[in-house]
Length: 373
Image (cartoon, rainbow, N blue to C red; front, side, top):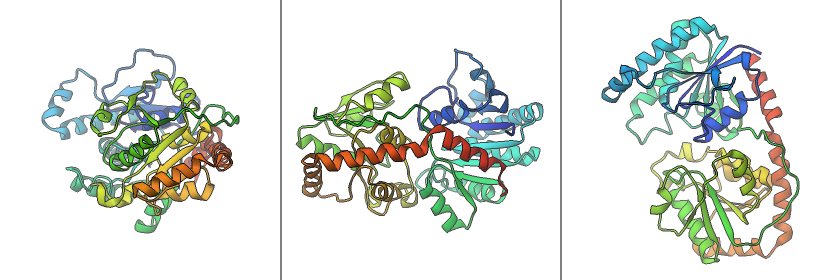
């Protein structure tokens, strides 16, 4: 195994979102001598076991550059590049891996690679320029993406949908490395009948309108909508919900098996400011946990999206491609009345989840690192 330095936003052992959980799963199964993580965020880690000791704050919390960064983010970036370059020359990694979905971590890893000559791989969890087209980062993201595609030794994405998009549009060689599932998959299939539906994660620009439609439809069928997220956004979406909190991953994984349905949704292009290139290639990290739980899944999104095509191809969940309330309600009622159809999709979900087991993803990761390109 090569020596790896990962540059990312958040310490991967502080599970605050999909990216940190993904990296925690991936790195947690490597030999500790093989990797280090440099992170830009301000989360402080107190439980310094061996894996935590492999992580380094690139901008110390009380550094004057943190203060200057509020006035000019470019100052923080320049300091992070300087500090990371120093660390690279001390650690001497064989490869840098810049992790997106924050443009800062990509920019830092790109500049450090240029300065040190260390090969760069970029791991994209969302589209870059397309995903930021509607934001203040539009111009900056286009510039960085152009430089990245010319400089990076390897482009890695989190989903086959993103890989297909980048290869088609930019004529690039792209690798796919999906989110992994480190726990043992429970093959015991059951279907709860408690009228409880669950949504894990944030409700925001990529899914707000589709979530509201799906939640409202389930509510008319007397389902209670349960949400587990880091923010309080669910209070402002116009749907009655019950907030759930699972402080440990193990409790979250266990809870997924207690609900009747797990909800997935992505907005249509005409109801979201997010680029259709972003929306149509998303494969939410929570999808893997949903599949592995064996609990029935309901997905609401356009039929041309990669997520819809994945679920239909593998017949591992109920897909609703219509925005008409009556049609949505009818599809759910048909599913509720057909226990055998639900059971077949549950079995298929658990089966396909095995493809995302940590050993298989780790093997893919190793092959990507040693491959030419």
